[in-house]
Length: 264
Image (cartoon, rainbow, N blue to C red; front, top):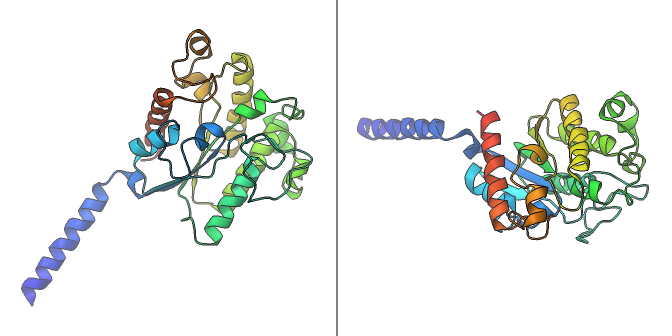
């Protein structure tokens, strides 16, 4: 009997040591929100044209689930309303990060999704690409968005700027998942908009991140996709906007490395 107890004790000690020796991210549940560059990686983050597949392989979290939708924007419209079912794959009033958050909240509430430890939001490409459809996108600075104390009491369809929508969505996430690490990723450079417009968009998202005290990764400045290169020859994208497999691998591994640096 004593021998069995000793064996059990040794086994438990070895198990504890093994768990302690694991990389921190191996114990984390990760969820991703975003637009088509995340969506093409699949809900299970297993499609090679999406950066999230390569991120998952490199980061090796306990679980990784994407709630991204093609065509999504951060920025809400006057007709945005609660909708967890729409999946149109193009720009629409309800195809916004706000509703991806609602889908995530519903999935957690219904037991279909483990409460996330890390939430990554990579969006902004469609906001800067289709400014005509989001006329209020730059109507407010990050500083102005965080001075507006009444913003969070409004419905989403009264928050019509990029800065306001980022704050609105992030506050939803922080209040619902107070222990999760929130990471914002700015859109990559693209052939569809100028480097200056991509930088302006990234600046707004980064400024919001600083106000919120969350990590921000600037793919427009640090990432793998160069507008100048893609205009000459498609190297990391299939069409100047969406990654090919090489671009997805590069972006995914880059994001994983950056996250490993902050999660110790």
